[in-house]
Image (cartoon, rainbow, N blue to C red):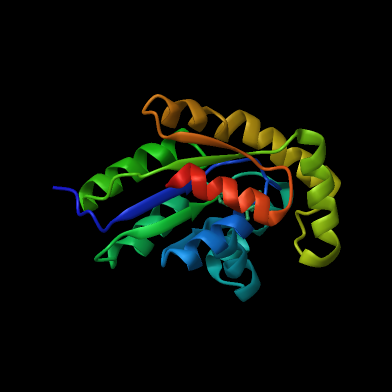
Length: 191
Ligand code: ADP
């Protein structure tokens, strides 16, 4: 029997769509834990852990970190949770990750509740990332790496839209407009 107090939301959308900011707000308004794999990986780089040293060149190139690394990270985060109340931001990013997440959630008895998909036109995405790069300190927030990240998204992550659409879980959300306007649309999409 699924535990009704579980709550699992997966934020999909291209780099620069604003997933992180919106997921943060949704998480704090609904007492959910936001799991941002980008933040977790960058934290390893900053702390100079063994993993951090290994993945730094991958992040800098805008490529994806290997699936087994991500799956181990997520497994670890979820293992200790009695109630699984999470928003995933930046995970899964490949079909292999999505399949593994299904297995993990099945083990925990926590089905996916909704998959909001933040949609923003390509040309705005690059502009947003370049603008963010002025203050983010992220070495991958340059125009060249941003373009690479978009390409990686199209090739490896977009197939997940079909993966979750086949189950009727995807809720497209227009990601253009003020933060508040977009947040309102997200609330409508996940309720
Ligand atoms: P954005 O959504 O703006 O691309 P993220 O913070 O989500 O930024 O991700 C930054 C980088 O971290 C990615 O380009 C990738 O190298 C790595 N990364 C994050 N999540 C994953 C994941 N699920 N699988 C593989 N690599 C990941």
